[in-house]
Structures are given as structure tokens and as C-alpha cells.
Length: 365
Image (tube, rainbow, N blue to C red):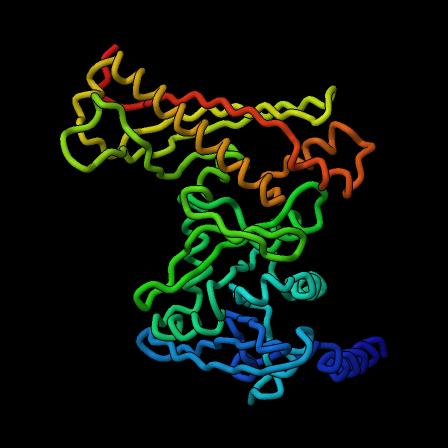
């Protein structure tokens, strides 16, 4: 009897189990776009997705679906209605924003991405010099669906760009006393390149900085271990000719900031310790002399101090705070609100000091 009951129970469970298994989505029945572009089209929004179709022998074929809407929120539903299969955005690698759209404000798109649990936190965002959709044509020709996101990640890993992804962008967007920044893309001779960073005030793009300035910003944001940069040389380090600069590689750097709020406006002392290796120098003999190496280190330190101070002044003149100076002051003075921080920011006094050490084989003691 017990055996018969057990058999009946197993039969009942076996008939129930298929109904308990969630419905699976077959990859061939869904579309997985890798890039979403958003532009302004007059007073409307234009969205486009680039969907790869992987073929034999490593070939990739792309399908482009675009749409126009009066609202930014229903671009994906409208794109979905133009697709044979359901469009799933959980594998997006890049959201590329047009310049006009970025200047109008991207807060609605950021909020939309925040609410969607399928969007990965490592998603990259970027701003195009003109229309974002124009860059999708170049990506189609490249045959590489993650071309733009890989380009950003590679430059972050090489130390020439600060850390950026959706998680970091949302932290800077919602955080008090700091502003967000995104990689800025432009076309050049039919190719796409990163041309520095787009800086935002709240959700509106305000201004750009170039690649060299983006590198300096990275030094202010974190302790860096890698990155390449051109610095002016001394007379002893230069040969005759037009070449007046030296290529250096950052072995490591350490940044420290000291905030003083006893007087108004507050002041911030910034100190950088930078250890570098000389990659290319017109006159290699200068590295054989300790005195000349010391002179070159001082020259580099002066250069970094001047350029970083100039960059900070540029930030303050445009009232954008990608470094997060306002956040540092806020932690020292809990009574300041967001409005007070914003009004105070352009008046903050900063002092930059940089100590450079050349770590180069062949230098004498």
C-alpha cells in the first residue's frame, strides 16, 4: 500500500513540475542590442539600437532599428514594435548620447536606467560630438558590437581616463558636491576616437576637456598606477630640433587633500607624489647624471602643478566639480546644504604641490 501511494505521488508531482518551471526565452527568439543611441530630432527624441547577428567564421552582421517619439521613456517600446522578435536590453554595452540631447539634460534617461533591473551597472555611457546615431554607421562597418565600450574600458585600464560606468555616473549624479563626466566621442577621417570628457552640471552637459586634461583629472581622483603623458623637458634633456617634450609613463601616483574650513572661503591643499619612467627623451644622456635627473624631476613637478592648478581654475570658472571638492568641504562642515555648496565652490582656494620621482635604470647615484 505504501509503495502504491508513493508511485501515485510521484506521478502527480511529475505532472505538476512542468507548470512550475519558468518560461525560458530562446536566444533565437529575442534581439540583444549592444548599443543604444539617443538624439534630439527637433522637439522629439530619436532612438536607435544596433543589434548584432553572429554568423559562421566569426562574421558579424548588424541590424539597425530606429524610431522617433515625443517622449524619451518609450523609445525602447517603440523600437520593440518595429522588431520581429522581442528586444531585450540586458546586454547593452553602451548608451551613446547626442550632443544636443546631452546639453538639454539626460536626467530622464539616467532615471530610466536606474529603474531597470536588467541594465548592468558596468554599462558605459558616452557623448557624441554631433548626432549619436551617425557613429552607429561606423560601428556597423567595424564588425565589433562592443567597439565603443571596449575603447573606453581600454583607456581606463591604461590609466589615461578616470573610472567610468553607470555605477560611477549615478554616484556622481546623485552625490552632493560632485558632478558627473562621460567620455566624449568624435569622428575623424571616418573613424571614432575618444576626445576627452564631457563635463556635466547636474544632468546638463556644460563643457569639454581634452585627453591630457582628462589624464590630470584622473590623477586628482585616485591613486593611479599607469598612464602616459607628455611633459616639457629641460635644456639639458633636449637635442637640437623641434622636439621639446618628453614622454613619461606613470609607475604610480598618490594624491592627498587637506581641507581647512576655519576661514571663508575654505581652502584645499592638494599634494601629489608621482613616480614615473621616462619612455622617450631626445637626449638620453641626461639620465646618466643625478644632478640633471633632479633638475628634470623639478621641471616635471612644476609643470604638473601649473597644469593641474589651471585645470582646477577652469572647473571653478565653469562651476563644474568633477573632482568632488564640494563633497570634501561638505564632510568637514555638516551644516552646508546643496545650494550653499554650489555657491561656495567657485570661491574655494586650492593649492597644488607635486613631487616627481624618476625611476629609470641607468641613473647614477
